Length: 235
Image (tube, rainbow, N blue to C red; front, side, top):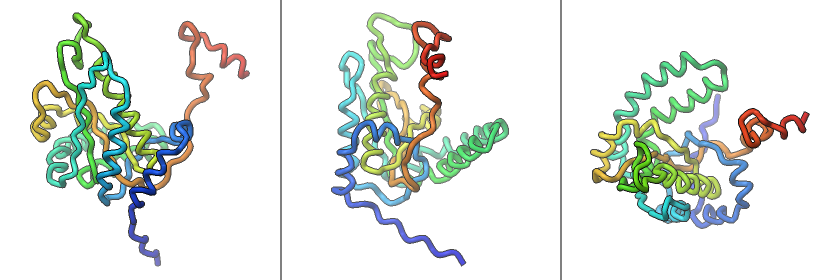
């Protein structure tokens, strides 16, 4: 007879914050997308700290026109992801049919779990950026139109690394924001504020650890694509 798993107890916030002393290289080497999360709420002070570190990232022209909508209310979460959960069922069906191997199918099962429990995630952070004459999400360069998404994702990476250091699970998601109109309505975003991505945050189920990536020699090209002297030297 299987023993009942012990109830999860979130770490003390002060203990978790001590993890921010983790060496940067260690955090980067062990960071991964954590989609399975415990449902217990995350301490507000801890959330404030990891979000404050997100804001240390650079932005185009130092515009800093970002906003982060932190969604904790259960009904608000349900409204935010309702259409996404329906759309992902269709997306997941096609993806599973095309899945070539067991590791991919395993990843899809994790994504299915996340989709089913999205509204139960402790916190959903929606990263947004203000659309102006200089910063637009689409279109050809005009006047001083500069990188739009590039002003958001450095902050998101800071947030993910900070979550890794304190032991929180997190992952960058764009699929839930394909339905921008409903997202605007639920979050009451002004017209100029564009939702860019959503980051579910909670205490990780399982552990962080070393990630599997191809050798650097296989993905680095010098001066032009196809010129890989590092790869040749390795062999």
